[in-house]
Amino acid sequence: MTNHKENLDGIFLPITTPFLKDESIDWDGLKSNMDSYAKSKAKGFLALGSNGENKSLDEDEKVKILETVLQHKAPHQKVIVACFVETTRQALRFIKKVESMEIDYFNLLPPFYFRSRMTDEVLAGYFTECADGSLKPVLLYNAPKFSGVTLSPELVTKLSEHENIAGIKDSASSGIEKFIEAVPDDFVVMAGSINFLFPAVVSGAVGGVISMANYFPDLTQELYVLGKDKNMEKGEKLHLRLSDLNKKISGAYGVAGVKATMDLVGLVGGVPRKPLLGLKEDQKEKLRKDLKEAGLLQGENK
Image 1 (cartoon, one colour):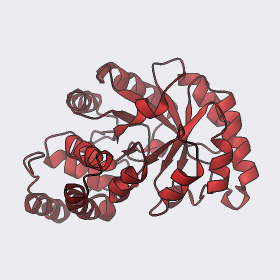
Image 2 (cartoon, rainbow, N blue to C red):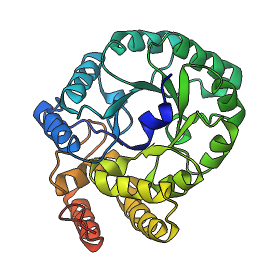
Image 3 (cartoon, rainbow, N blue to C red):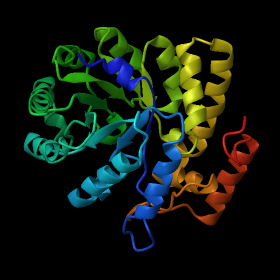
């Protein structure tokens, strides 16, 4: 029987998709980033997620991105694949298209265009049919900021009984403890933000999918370890330092800020696909100043 907690403990990078000036994918840049990440302490990757600009990619691009990630990751690193679609039919089609690849989990965002119709009954049907139709385990994704749909603890408790639903990634700004309390011990709960990673791990989350790990993977992993060890003094200090910085990067600028910071620390970030815009020069300079003040401009030095 698969030990999902063992597979998913630690930090997963929700990898970005680098683009060239003509908005085509910078494949060399993606390979370069993956080669760097393969040497890091990251437990694995979430591919095709929000930071990967899922909604900006066509299906062929998604498949090639997965192929590239799998070719360049370290052998021990796990791969979660995001699926953000509007119908059960679309989800199962995508799952069947890529499940034969050496991926480990699917991460399913609930459909949200008809959000007022996304009752617990509808959502239970969606997640159950997807899990039934997948050869790989499924992780639920609670991200009301993006979807406008909030998964209830009662729904998650019910779905935790499904043998092919392994856990939940929670990116809501508060309340991850309610999921930890609502599910059995073998059901995985992962934090979706550096802003609450430390308290979540202290409370029982197994790890997190953290955008900051795209540019500071080892420092993010260090915070996870402090939480796992319940080292409150050092953990609180690092938690405050990183969450404050995160508000100035992802909080202020979204994926464009993540990508600009990657550029500043020597990775390949670039700009988002339109209509999203990259940072202006004054914004980049402010980021540079913020990183310098945090003592992190030259890498992950503390």
